[in-house]
Amino acid sequence: MRSELAISPSDWLKEHPISIQNPASILSAFKPVAIKVVKFKGPHRLYRASGWDSNRGQIASAYGSWWADERVLAKLAQRIDMFKNWLPDELRRKALPIQYRGATALCEDWNDMREMFSLKLPAGQEITGLVGIASEQPKLSSLDPNSRHTPMLQGGAEQVYFKRTPTLNSVNPLWVYSEKLF
Image 1 (cartoon, rainbow, N blue to C red):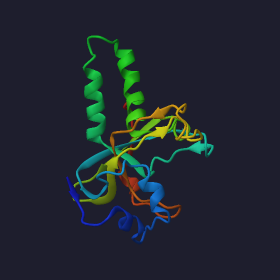
Image 2 (spheres, rainbow, N blue to C red):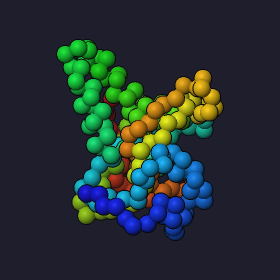
Image 3 (cartoon, rainbow, N blue to C red):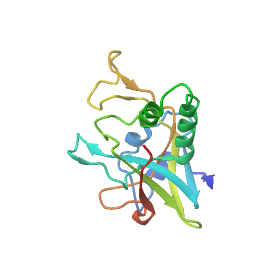
Image 4 (tube, rainbow, N blue to C red):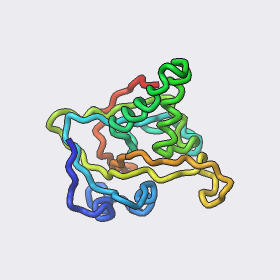
């Protein structure tokens, strides 16, 4: 279950105990329309890709901030299933992670998507996050997003941001499970 809270996204990002120092850096990852603070109440499921982050030279955390509601993945899978009789199963299996990357605007150098994780929010538990539409990003984070020659990931899917700092995380690690989706 989801319920919208009556607080501005910027104010929520600044709230303690997990205060985000530069709210604009988070808000810029969303299209500027209809970003809202939402409380999720379990049971509920969200998904996150994880894999090699070539910028940092390490694996992206399974407990990171950026997630997609299971409805987003279900919609992507439905669109791909429309081609069940037209495309071989192998191509359709490859299409889902490609569609996920494009719809969530997940730069290739941030994450190679070798793993997927689910956040299974148990019944009665709650977590609050920002919900909005992913804005477009360059295919590689080092590319100039203002150049007309830069290949862009379009975004457009709903994404969820949960607060995290180097020492605090709103995502309970006991809720996160490895998944085999692709």
